[in-house]
Amino acid sequence: MAVFKTTLWRLISGTLGIICLSLMATLGILLKNYSDCCSCHEKWVGYRCNCYFISSEEKTWKESRHFCASQKSSLLQLQNRDELDFMSSSHHFYWIGLSYSEEHAAWLWENGSALSQHLFPSFETFKPKNCIAYNSKGNALDESCETKNRYICKQQLI
Picture (cartoon, rainbow, N blue to C red):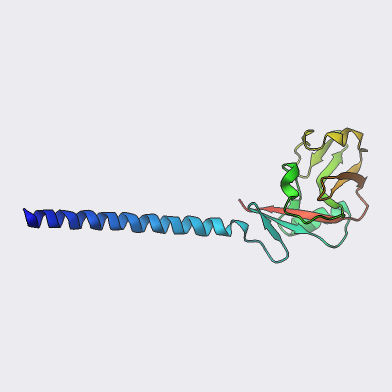
């Protein structure tokens, strides 16, 4: 009887050891995947599993869009007003992925989705045929798309 109990306990402890090792390996894989979430290229800033390129040079809106596309990213499409919280306070305006579509007679993001009015309620006063520049203080500015501004590219990692 004593030999049976010892063998049973060894079997149980061995099984629990294997389960524990499996859980630790799974946790290690999950932590590695999560830590890679904000692994961005040099000169890019990681924030909430996205990478942002904040330019110091100025380009037109189209030139900015082409640069972002060449980096497998797009001009910034704001999801909410606090998305730029990670930026230091800056007086510069940056091109974002928002422009006026004459075809749709509406402000559209670069991906074709419509602008949410709760994000920028003052857009009704902006001039059609322009593009939008944005700064870290939450101000939006409608300017000719041919004006040169700094720009922000966004690359979604997940």
